[in-house]
Length: 110
Image (cartoon, rainbow, N blue to C red; front, side):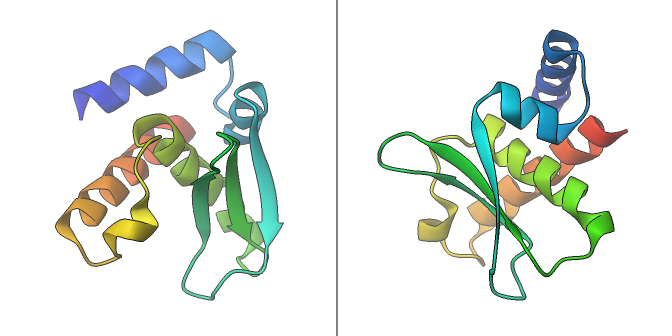
């Protein structure tokens, strides 16, 4: 987890912001609000053309949007080449990756 803290520290120092939206803009990660299943707050997606985007569920509460963006940014920074959809939501690796992204978002937003 020290690695994650170091990445957050470097990222916020370099971009001089803790806003996940500003960081995404500077990293050219597109943020798209979409109708997603109720159980999905957000997703990080990397297309076959190497475009990166964060999909945020249109139906989540406004207060949760920033945290969701920060969490998905954590996946973008920490797990750029991992396709979580292929791993399956109940795998141990998925749970580990998700907890790392959650830790990233907590550090970024605090």
